[in-house]
Image 1 (cartoon, rainbow, N blue to C red):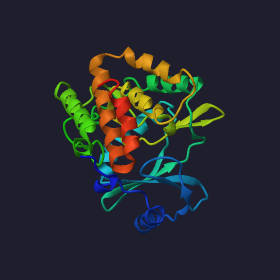
Image 2 (image 1 turned 135 degrees about the vertical axis):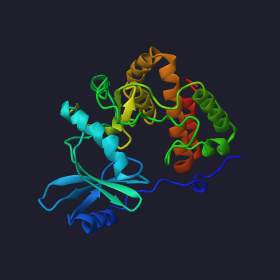
Image 3 (image 1 turned 45 degrees about the horizontal axis):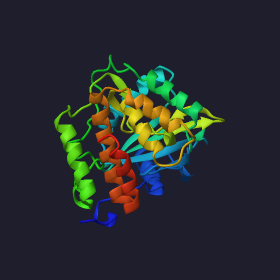
Length: 291
């Protein structure tokens, strides 16, 4: 019953040179590709514009620019107006079925290990996201995809067919979805990929939060669940995971359980399609702690 990752569709990675050429063809803006940005599953690249400024070039396959403007880009405008450290978008362009973005390069480098000071800052940023979309009702709420597939992620079939353990996990995820709303309630900003690798820092001080492509409306505490899954990827300083787990333990079950189910589906599906069987087991170990 176990399948190989090669049997499942993988996410399309950024071809920076081709994307930069498409930007030039569509806008006349000539970009020099300097190289890939660290981390990330789909990819981003450092580029230099005609005036010498450096930017980040991104492509989101299967996405319309109108969707980004109504959702994630609108969220970032709200955040930046409040002084939240998220990048500005200089250019948004439709290239075939992909949305291409040219974004501000913020100072700092991704946090590799989240210490207690970093956790304090992450929690403060998360708290500042509360209620920011109350006056922006047109920004869509986040779909948890517990009963149906997401757009290129949160796919159910890989779990159903990988092995018995993943199939049983998928059944628990669907059971959770049957007992909760499909969309996350609330007027908070939700980043949706708020892990420590998307926090930039200089000398331990967070200088930016990047990768807002999936941002929307909901309950900011979803991002704390995402942060917990991110900490599972590598060993962290003593006590950090325990502190975050204590915060999650205090969340209402109707918030924690569907958010945990979403992240369990997202990470297990992605591992099945992109990584080794051992990494799939690694994510199921965490998923089963609360499902």
